[in-house]
Length: 63
Image (cartoon, rainbow, N blue to C red; front, side, top):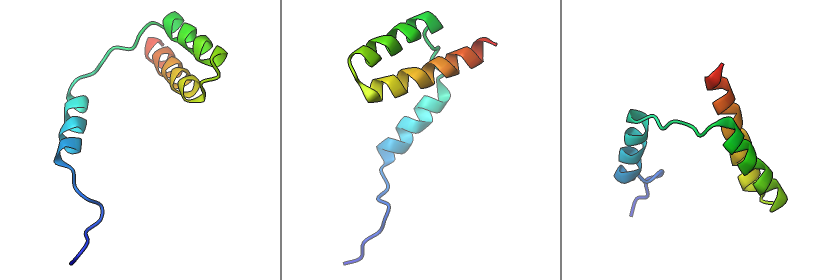
C-alpha cells in the first residue's frame, strides 16, 4: 500500500477558486472596531486577531 501526501481535495480547490473570483466588500471600519472591542471584552483571542486583521485591511483599502 502506498501513501501519497498531501491528499488532494478537489472541493477545497474549487472553494479557493470560487473565493478568488468573487471579492467580498469589507464592513466599515467603525463596525470592525466595535467587533474588535467586543471580542476583547469577551477575551476571545481568535476573534481579536481576526477583527484586528480585518480592520487593517479595511483601513488600507480606504486610503
